[in-house]
Image 1 (tube, one colour):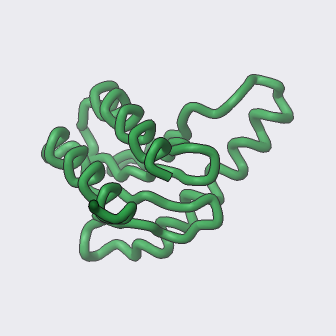
Image 2 (cartoon, helix red, strand yellow):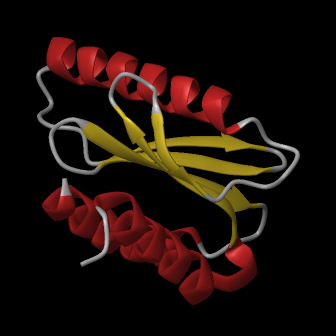
Image 3 (cartoon, helix red, strand yellow):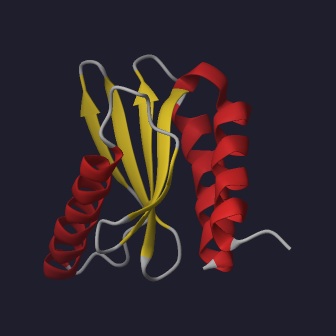
Amino acid sequence: MASRQEQITVVLDNLRTDMGADISGVAAVGMDGIVLVSRMAADVNADRVGAVAATMMGVTRRVANELKIGLIEETVLRANGGQFVVLPAGDQHLLAISIRQGANLGMVLLEARRAAQEIGKMI
């Protein structure tokens, strides 16, 4: 039987394959910022992505709690060169995705939610 890390790798690889060029990188990260599996571009520091993803989710959860708007479904950072999305993947893990400028964000989010649920079930 495949290890948990191998199973997560398959999910991330499938997400990248399904979304083609829309996704430039993806990582499964613990809430502590430690990267479980990364498929980020070679010029991107995966450990920093993990730290940033965990920080973004922590701040977003505090804001949502303060505003009493419910549980976070995703955090989206839009910049002039692309987007960065962080989604919960179970209670203690995250899915972080770097999305290229001009990508179909709706389709990426649809597939990302499915992938995050799969990862959450594995962990």
